[in-house]
Length: 325
Length: 302
Image (cartoon, rainbow over all chains, first blue to last red; front, side):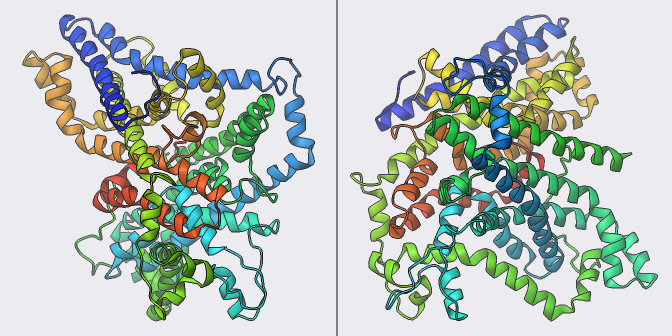
């Protein structure tokens, strides 16, 4: 039951066994809880929480602390080297490219995805085919980053500019139609990083649109009506009514996309594998840990990722508190 | 996320009402607004459409001409799909099965455990309740990357490396903070009079949980369940870390490998991509409302 399953029957058996095992755990807990007389609330509560606390301690808390500890060790993880890994991240020329790319991702993706999402939400608001129109933009959100990357890699496909060779990627074909020469889109840096960012925007715009559309629909009608009676121009309506009303939602969307972007791994991994100067922190973590077997540096990169997430979340919570106050 | 507002994507019943957005839109006078919306919609659909068309074109045609020539010279074949399912080649059926085997327990396990915990947090009094709740809530922000390597060595020590258990346990643990948070918010909304009434009738915690709360919890369970389903199905990082061997790796890993090793085999990549997205797209189309709700509630995960 705890071995590598190789046949279909094995796999399905293991799957049902796993589900039944955890169902049994829940069953035993409920059974004990029902035996204990109703007066001992706290005992039952601890019982209910026991599996969760165990899994979180072993699955998140311990590994997190362990990674922080390991980030002060060398590649093999057997010699303490202080903050050298962090120094390397901040000084090594390759690592600086990684930091630069991560900055590009986090600066551009949230604002552009939110901008497109907001524009589209406003444009299709109350349109006859609103739900269909929204589904089109939202669909990329439901597929894997890997599939999205394959879709866009095909868009960016390059064929050399010679004789009878025709472009098969739409982007290069459009360049040719406009009279230009085909470009090796995923190889030229830093252009390639921006083309990868475009994939993330393509995925996240639907998320922004959905949240912002919901926020727009929640604006009370009497406010809108009052502004209209005052003769507010459409632009004024957007600037002084819509935007202030949806500000909390905009901040949630921006910060959520920023956090997701910071951790982006699948797109870079699938489209370029981090080559041609496209690596970002989350991808570099994977390369260093598993390809270059540099455990210490990998751990330090993961910790840097963690540290970068924190201010975004703090900002988010502060803004939400302010808007609730 | 701290805004767990239920949201539908269906338009409201009274479409003639004026909203702030529709007034703002008039600035762009209708034809221009429609054109802008159309351009965005086309830009967002065309890349997927191009690959979909390609997946039905013969290998030679894909490699020598653009997919847009399909409309002047239509040739349709199912060979690409046959090729990705060929057991001696890409063998996608096995990876598809792996994805299912990985995903179902990774959804059901955290849902069961989180329901118990959420109930304890919402309706029981015990020492350290607030501290524990905040601690679990805070764990949501831990990036997965921070946990992967120590977990990997832990699994090796436990003797379960390279089994489905690594994925089930990891995905379940990563899901718990968010699941507890969403379910707790939902359980809190249940009027306490309902619980009190059940208590008066002599129902214990077990009976209250099953007879009173579970039926009310269904929408929240569905919302989180679908969200987690798509998250696990679409995951690459966790699978790549723990499920390196083809016996247990999911379809995303195989597709990513294919993109890396045979990056120009577009007849295989296009068909493979569509086999991998058929499940999430179906789930999305059928359960859009719940999916959106789960998304709104759980967007900071990962």
